[in-house]
Length: 539
Image (cartoon, rainbow, N blue to C red; front, top):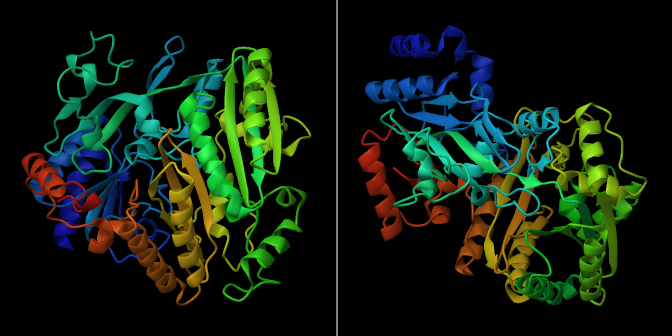
């Protein structure tokens, strides 16, 4: 205890006593995520500048104590703030929340690690900007950088967030600062925020899903508001017809008729963001999926609209005539493959007015059409918290206010394999996921993110109530089995949870050439293994 207090004081000398958190309640919360963990946190340090981050890293190396950086810790379903190494110090970067550069003409914004989606939205609206952010399925107060460096997925054309970024500013494990791309040439460089690669080896990717440095700043490219926007929304009732639809969507993407990302959601994925499990009339493991879905659909007008699969294709056109032509071609291509097609239309003027109304707190619906008022908001870059209702789906208590899934003991873990963009592969992977989740009496909430013309990221979740005895263990067994089966079939995850990182069977071997190479880099830059040891099984 005496040594711990001494360590506290040394960090207080860098960030101030008020930014070293030792309160038992705060520490207890930082040790919680949406599944069972045992790792303990010494305390939380909140640096307020890049210089303070550097000084904290140097101090940790000197003291030989592991530090675990997080942006804002809203990584629900993946591990939140819980470190992989016991007795780590959390380095929380929420105070680094400045927007340090912005260019309307070239469409980029540079932010720090603690800058949230809401911060960027508010900033753009305060400038009267016509730029749009790609929103996330996380909360409005989650970090852009935190999402990007774990290679998270957004919405629309710029959904693959890391692909539309550049100029990383990184504090290395020795406390030194490095910038990537042509940003490394200093402040007189004028191309660093519009060109990703620069000269020489591209090292940006080394700082994603790794523990080789702390990303404190980053530039993101933003979409221009289109002159005309259309959203093609379609439904498919019979899952047996899904493979043919998937193949057709691939060909539409390959031909250039549609531009990825193309998104599809199944019934449980959509309904679980609207309501909780109907425990008054249904019982998990006893009531069939179809009966549960029927009860849920009967409970609200919006739920009635949800089909087995629900898809979205966005069109950004230069005019209504352009949009109508493309939407018509897409509708013709889909009409014999799906049960229903609807098209939402918005002009640039309508979009910008809706953005300003939301910013000013008016929050008026865009129209009587539910699809128009609900779905199109996320494509306009309006951050929302609707998706974080999903972890509450299997809670026995009814929640009218959604706040923090960690605090409320919500169980959730993500399953996210990448599969080739073919109906055969999608069906095979979905069968593995659905049958395994059903075996353990959970509901298969699944989305398909068609990230390119060749690959689909399947994003599925297991949701449970951590306050019900035995459900943690049941979910853990399900998670282990479904990932094992997916890996055996050749489908591996694009992103890992800390649960997966702890499991050697889920993370893969630790002696393959790839891991050996990355660990040799880790040894070179962080010989004391101070920075987030074991993250993604590195170090």
